Length: 524
Ligand code: AMP
Ligand code: MG
Image (cartoon, rainbow, N blue to C red):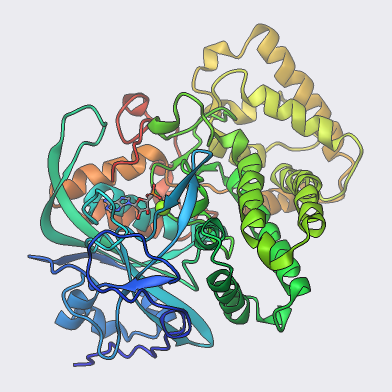
């Protein structure tokens, strides 16, 4: 059988950047190095739960290879690909606003980089055992969090949101001890491993660690490497190149945050070690999807008090994190002003891009002065009474511009407490629909054309928190059919799927306060 799974291996990160001279998993501060060589832990009874055919193809792995022993062993850590040396990356980060020092891949192990169809991919196992960066933890991942990462990263891709991808989801066969709610009730759970894939897993924190240590030599090496491979159009590194590099990272970050706001995704832990230098959504932990539209919502129980990572604060946090990256790159630029100019631009660009995105959600192709007010009023209304974001925008596309019917009747399925839509609240909605109708009448598109446009940006299906939890509950009992069902459903999130109408529904009441549905912890 193909011992290398037909992969066209081409390692650059571990070939071109300095390695930690120490081997082994002993916890340590790793200096003047970008990574440490470390092998995945052997698993006792690995079993594949799901493989993405699309990612097989993307990586150039023949379909039939997925059922081989080699495939199973490689993607659960039991076998190392020939001529490769797995490694864990060294990075630091600001966690919840504070510098946390060295973090690093505590449970992610990079297997190799491959190039297929001119695209570079780094292949990484998450949950494959201890590394020098595991600190006090075990390097493992449990089934529930692995299902959440596997399903959501692929769903995000199909929603058109920049993201890391996933190739496979497997059980390790080992038990993992977790105190899910951090309340002293630790229990054994099934261990699992996700093989995730991205052009690069470099984070803001990879740059921050060298700047924090005053190691400008390695900082420059890493920055030059990143530009050479992932921003090659910027050319030979110079002060000007570093400024342009930062500008492009800022733009990509902004683009991704606008996508999150469009689809109602709340990351939950936007620490700088969870910010991709390629602007990808990375590290799916206690994330969540808005059901009721609420700028103040955070899915992460660790964040419940300050709500730093709430939905409405993601744009600001993107900027805050970019400040940290700017500080880290400053030694290479030696001039604050050009970096500050880029940071200042972020705010105005964000407002512009956000307005553009909301116009699309409303089906407005032209631009008028009143649009901002119309959008602001809508956002206020959406918070008056719990209103399902996904259902609201999807149903809104059916509102005809010349109707005499009340607009509210078109979207009533989106309200969690329809009985609240009366009196002052109803009046506000009627006022808004009157304004929206007048605004639509200034558009040239027909109702059908507008609906078509809107349905391309307003998904019909997202991975609602309770849907992932249902798949987890089944999977924990050994039934993986719902994982597969949701995986397939979320491949076409913008399409009408009559057979799947049951997933186009409000969150059921039982899920309102259930662990995993409304409350998620970092314990994973
Ligand atoms: P996160 O909050 O998941 O982004 O993780 C923050 C840091 O903790 C990263 O350096 C992770 O690699 C590390 N980490 C999280 N969970 C574990 C674990 N179970 N074992 C080892 N390291 C972990
Ligand atoms: Mg992380």
